[in-house]
Structures are given as structure tokens and as C-alpha cells.
Length: 120
Image (cartoon, rainbow, N blue to C red; front, side):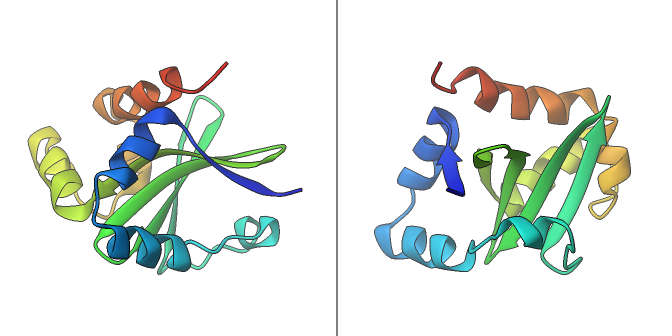
């Protein structure tokens, strides 16, 4: 069974949003395993580092960062685009360069924060 699993941090991030916005984001975030094999570049981005592949999905003004797992996907972060844009500005990266983002230690620290909150 394909599941979408939110770690504690991403669950807290989406829970902090108004209920209607939560429902809207989740309604947009309809992903099937085959969607990850043929990514729509308007909605998805792929960030890679040291063999680890992380996906970015655009839903409204938010970016959902997740990885594919055997049981489905694990959502690591749910970030407002302006918040993330601020992060990119601070690290002096172009906004649309997923490849450069994948090489940025600060980005992976952000993702690893979410991974550490995952239930054992």
C-alpha cells in the first residue's frame, strides 16, 4: 500500500497552517508511484547529493520536500515559498537551480532536521 508519511517536523509545519489551507495543499499533493518516474517539471524538482534523491513539489505558495521510500513517500519539510526564497537569498543561490541547491550544506541541514524527528 502506497503511503504518504509526514515526519514530526513536516507534520508540525503543515499543522500550523489554517485548516482550509492544509486541505487545499493535501488535495493538490496527490502523488502516485508512477508520477515519480515521469516528473512534471512545472510541479516537481529533484535535488540530489551523495546518492540521495529528494523531490520538491510545488503546491500553491508552498514547497513540499519528500523522498521516495519502499512504503511510499516521506515528507521532510513543508515550507512557504517566501521563507525558502529567503533561505536561498541568504546562501546566494539562484532560485531555480535544484542542482546547486543539492550541493548546499545548509539545505541538507534543513532536511536532516526533519529526518531526525522521524519516528523510529
